[in-house]
Length: 110
Length: 125
Image (cartoon, helix red, strand yellow):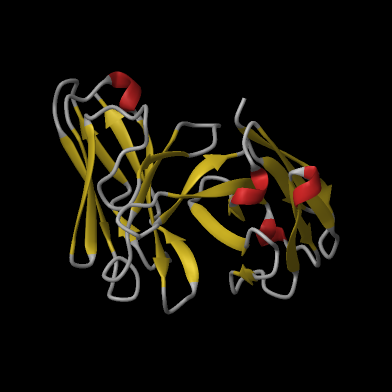
């Protein structure tokens, strides 16, 4: 069981906004930055958000991140059908001395 | 092209060993820390191991410590993972990953900014 948890699924219709949340603790999200990754079936993950709220070049500004306390969120506005993917949060856990990932959230664009 | 390409996966019996390799291109490999992660079928991502730029420090997840060994050869732009005493639960896609540092104001948070395509390891008799 992951020390960082995410809802297994989320959904929205094209044009809508959706938020995916990652919940952790004082040994991980509470004291370290959070990154978000996007993964399509059969492919490697791609970095979407780093350092809580920063986007690598090439990532649309429809994607945004935030962090508060021991939780972090990924918001996607103006949903596109091509946003249908699995989204993972990642952070460093000081107690485990390991990178930890949320279990992933499957986003469905209806 | 900036990329990481893994190889070395395959079908192996329980208790067996493999050496996974990862060759980089398109960037200065010796300027980045390297990691191995894996993803079991239908499961989430699991961090396994990391190695510093010079190779002088390595760290492992508890689940693989003592069985897996990470190494690198900067002259060959390559990262390796020796996996020993394999178990059924080690069956997964293994990814070679670069950790990028995004410095701002003297702080350099890391992120897995480049992934290989993965190599499949199947442990079964």
